[in-house]
Amino acid sequence: MRFRQTGSLGAQANAAVSGLAARADGRTAEVADRAARAIVVAVRLLRIPTAVVGAAPLPFIAATLVLGVLAKGSVGVAIVVVGVAMALVSALFWGRRHRVLRAVADPERLASELAILVSLSGRVEESRGALAEIAGGGGWRVLSRLRGVWKGTQMTGRWIDGIGDLEHARYFAPPKIGTNVTITVLALWLIPISVVVTLIAVVGTIAGSI
Image (cartoon, rainbow, N blue to C red):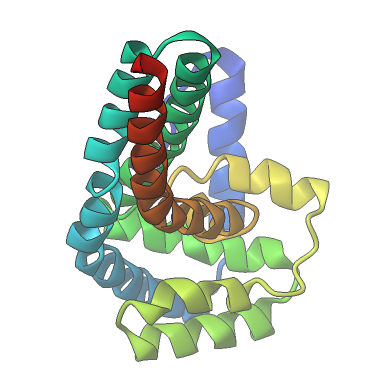
């Protein structure tokens, strides 16, 4: 596993990751490989459902923005502001979805990086055992149960520096795994909110034109 090098900084990153990978024992590597494959399956199963979640509010967001432009005065400005806010949440969700899908594109590299994360956690036996349970479970629940693997892991400078170099596994460990959950919840709430906002925008636009 190599990273693109940019002078000495790239070389140092490669050396650091290579050193951590070398410390991962055979049992950890085996468990990480099985867990990576379970994660890949789970993410691919969620590919279509997440696309539906992301696409559902788009027509309402577009309608809200159009109605905001058509509306007059402060009402129109308020509608546009709300529409832009919803569009930003939608863009955030689509961007994170794309990065997570890209993270599972290379299962072997993901497995190597998961093994490194176990070493970085400072709780090798416990983290490895939890990862083994996830590897045997399968299904979409793998992603929600991943948070339990790193429970109790200290966000030390060593962890933060190390996880920053792991382009694939970092989306399945803190702090990004918590961000994944938050963004997904926001996207789910965006569906009913966008419908309600669109209806309010219709009423506001009609009232403003009278």
